[in-house]
Amino acid sequence: MQTYTTLHGVAPAEADMQRFFRVTPPTVHRMVLALERRKLLEHIPGRSRSITLLVSSDEIPKLERRGTDGAF
Image (tube, rainbow, N blue to C red; front, side, top):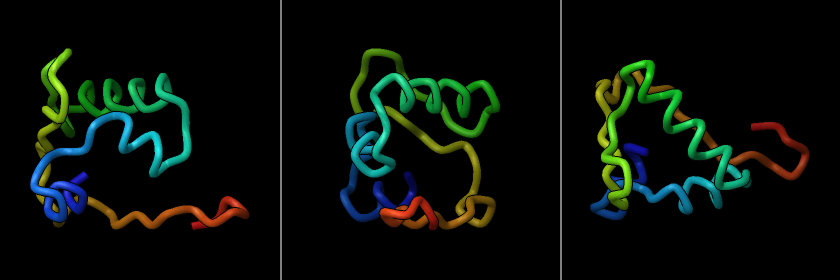
């Protein structure tokens, strides 16, 4: 999320995360809610691109797109 925001100047929409992780919309929504419950991010329900990270970039592991074999 931080890299996306840095590159695009806005937070990712749930649809952007869906495409990146190749998962369904409900999966992304549950992920966002779970991260919010853990106080890792906050968002405004019903407002697009409102995700704000609540942790520093040093605390976030770098992710890479999965290959076709499912490995990182």
